[in-house]
View (cartoon, rainbow, N blue to C red):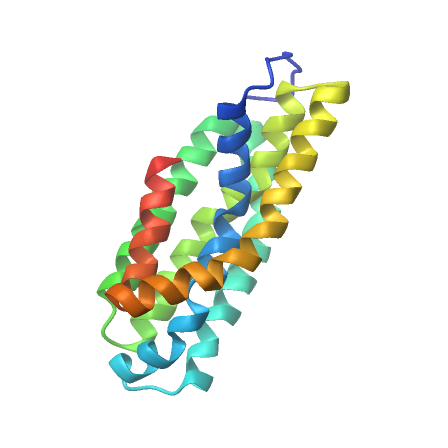
Length: 180
């Protein structure tokens, strides 16, 4: 917590945690894209109208980031990450229970509120824990995970949508958040 540098060993487990926290937002955004047609049919809405789930997610995510840094400085990184994950899980539950588009949009807003903390704070935690070469290595691996998530998450979403239905995409990101 805080902004003090306590050099920790750069372990694979810690890197996996930070990379997972950083990429959860991209995963949550892109995993649902292949399911838009099925979601539209189930919710009785058009794919065009479903784009509101993306727009509201992005706006909430962006605005939420303005508050995450100052809040984490005041209350600590760990507490804010854990609260963010809990809020994100609640958003996943709202999305998975949605029977109408407004409910799905509300769930996506809640998801974005939670996941913006994990995305921002993964890099801040790396800066708190590491210096020099270890920091550079940690940040580069976090960035690789953030860059890879938009590439593989639609494939993952397509598989889960085909095998288990569109609601499974929300269960997958929820389980990932719980594991983190």
